[in-house]
Length: 317
Image 1 (cartoon, rainbow, N blue to C red):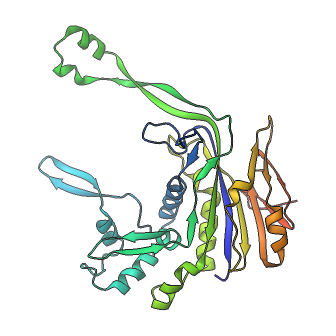
Image 2: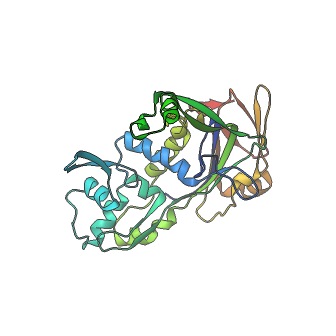
Image 3: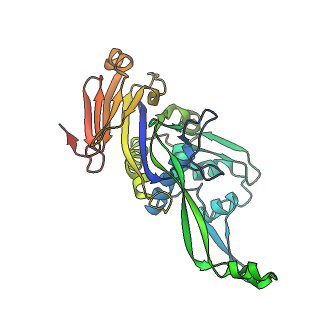
């Protein structure tokens, strides 16, 4: 691929929790700013690729183990996952060229890179696609707890001696679910195909191709929306910006030039990057903005922008 790509991926979370920390609350910095980690965005993308039949290495999968107590399901180790995907591979990992070829044949490694300290190897691949932290631009976001009533009682009364404790155990149990009322995360990303030039010279990959880019682009538009777990049911893709440039154009983190303005019927996303992009226009191949036109308006100062419906991919006039 003879270009670089810079962009932003926007995720909206309503009455949901896009990325929780170990306390269960949305991740935040020391000053209270809410953010989502790059792993939170990459995971639904990997899940979607896996469902589409692509080879994905860094994703949880299980194996059956026969034990005295019965059959147990345990997560595979990285080596086991690799052997599962490549059953004919060199068990000792002595053929490093074959190992690298196999790693590059998995779609998540091809995009995001890998650290593979298995089979006697210590390999590190810097991914062509680098995704930053997604800062929440909606300042009035509030996180709170919901109480959840379980349909089952606590059967630990088998070991209880106190009568009062036994009476409490007859009641069904309570749980909690922590969500935020609304948050809007904006992730910066850059695609640098030159990251793989050394591996192309080794003959283990053809490099980051247009086909790789199109697969990333298609998944980046809908992966969060498609990932409907209980905690993520209110999380959806709402924005994606792709700026294709010549290989030697270097742009900063574009998410820092985005403002989110909450509206009653339709919110506004402001792009204030015209001063950066417009002087470089002869070296910019195209600028595409995908968004949900039913909930958002786009205001920008960029020349020759093409705007598309995020879900239908039809160009908006």
